[in-house]
Image 1 (cartoon, rainbow, N blue to C red):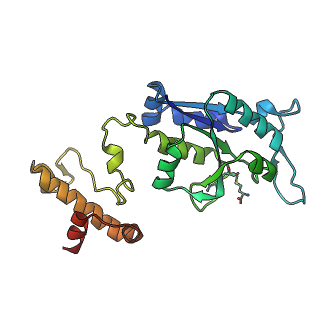
Image 2 (image 1 turned 90 degrees about the vertical axis):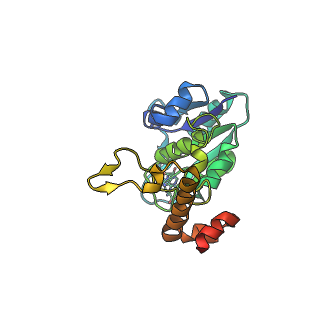
Length: 241
Ligand code: SAM
């Protein structure tokens, strides 16, 4: 059974772009992931398709109304028999990292709710949302880009989606370390050559070099990743050298 992601957004054409290209596009084509969009405008209570209104208490901006969002979420839920977890993309949510992605990826169905304007009527969040997820400590003008980020990150983790089975397991963060550098032809690019060990054919040496690079980079760029985890004995030995 494939993974299903339903996105609630006033800009469906924007988020569907993520389903057209590259790894996600292939996964959709092969039926490993299903992505659907629901526009709360189609569920507005008036014929103008109003989905926002002025905030109680005054102040600038508009707030997304609860009723059209609730109706869109209900339709999304009914589109598939399996239970869905509703995620509101929000700067106030738990900040996403690779572990968070792996946790979300365990659900067969997610409904991703994209806010706009000043945000969503709090009562809709109380009534329908299971979890709020942020993609970082900055504010965007809508939840569509965050939803696309979540879709991309989750789909990469579906078994069989990535061509080479191991490539997700070796990416940055999957191992708890940043990835090692990569090289392809030519051997000499404007005077910069490829590290000789990578052309040696000695797989053991290549593996050790890559691990050293990954450890070194992580140490220099993101030392907190190292202090937050237990290194394997082999990794600790290389770091001590
Ligand atoms: N007033 C809200 C606040 O300060 O929490 C921000 C609203 S923001 C302008 C509009 C929408 O963009 C939000 O409802 C949310 O869906 C989305 N959004 C903005 N920044 C985000 C982030 N860092 N992560 C996830 N979603 C975000």
